[in-house]
Amino acid sequence: MTDVLPRRSREVVAALAAAGVEARVRVLPEATRTAAEAARVLGCEVGQIANSLVFVAGSEPVLVMTSGRHRVQTEVLDGLLGLAEPLRRATPEEVRLATGQVIGGVAPVGHPRPLPTVVDRALFDYELVHAAAGTPHSIVDLTPQQLARVTAGRVADVRR
Image (cartoon, rainbow, N blue to C red):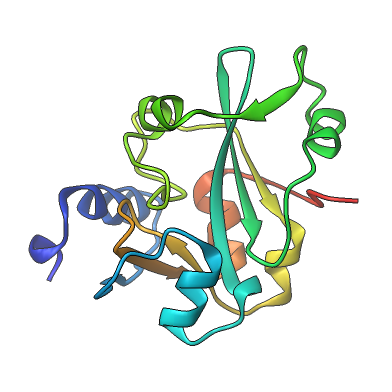
């Protein structure tokens, strides 16, 4: 089954397995680059979509797994993380360099090196959440607890 997955998705499956999580990756018939697109294709609430957003403080990337139902407030994260420099959204090139994946397909794992990660507390409102699995056409289903564990993410509110 996994050998029919795109290479980036196979890397995600391998990273999840290394963390002790067996999760099914699905390849979707169309790209889901936004939470709204993913929710429509999956037939779920937009809040169940675990958006993978990459920010940069100076030159250091930070991954934020946020619920698709709202936007991240960087000033909240700046205070939470106590970074020397304020966060800004990563450019597409910075996202690709940090994750090995393209915007719209960034998975919570499977990156060249683990990224400091914040997991939005709002994702815990759901039993199951859906995250990109390395490409804009692939999705992996995880519990919020699994998501926090495999990313070693800090669970926090990402907005006021």
